[in-house]
Image 1 (cartoon, helix red, strand yellow):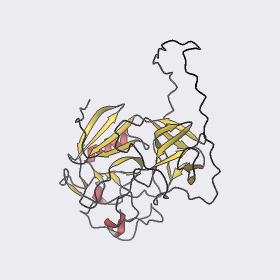
Image 2: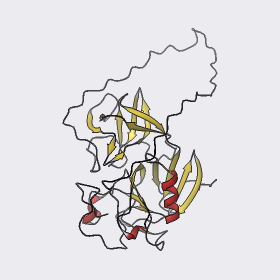
Image 3: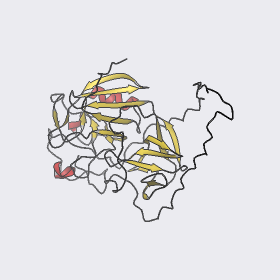
Image 4: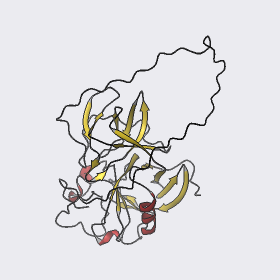
Length: 303
């Protein structure tokens, strides 16, 4: 989408011709995400039986200490809509379709690290480009939480304890490139599936885990009057997209017609029907994880 890259919610002068599938930048008036869902406080009902819980038979392990967080210099960059700084670790489970059920919402400026007790590389603010920021938790380790990194592909950022709220995430979106299918899951069960159009050759929709970053009104009639979801992912090859789309994010949106559904015709975005997009906008909150795979081993069965 041809927006000013330094101000991702201001249109660039001139639009890419209709019919070219475009990527999405959030607008300055990006609508605030749905209200955060409180973290569940229900106790764990699982019963774990010990073979012989006597002092002589229980293995005595020293309690693991939480690695301290190194002070973050004031001059570190703040993560925003521009590409994330280098140095963050790869997501080792990026193709895993296990639902991510918790998210992190910063309540103040917090540092993002390359490992528990590692180097601080950047800061997260409570909002990113005007939208309340929620990132799915991909891993936990000794008191630290790893979240999916926005404005980057297949990368994690580690957060020290404190400075954020943990929120429940009930939904997940899985996109299968080979069969051009998007499936919406709730609590691990498939709810609905829609046919999609995806990235063309050289501008393929990026594989791996990302998440719904936020929503924006459609900037032109080609979007069929339906709001757009911007994702945390970006083009794998930024130089391959049209010049007016450099610095853009991958988007989930509809189009003015459905003629190209089931084909690879976009600049990397994920297109669905207007009715499908409206349903996702109504039901799926920002922070929800989205995984792009080639194809699931077992086709989803909808509820």
